[in-house]
Image (cartoon, rainbow, N blue to C red; front, side, top):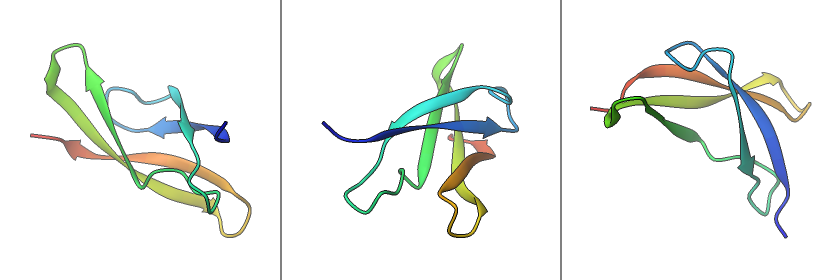
Length: 68
């Protein structure tokens, strides 16, 4: 079973929410997250991974804009 981590979403309509993602074999989460809004894919937003403290293994997904 793959390891997972909970990562907060910052900005956009999902601000303050968290998601659980699987870590890759190197212990890193996916570089982006596409958050599906109430409108479905038409309202999807892109969040990009940021390190909160280099080397600490703490991350957040920062809002970058709409996916369309």
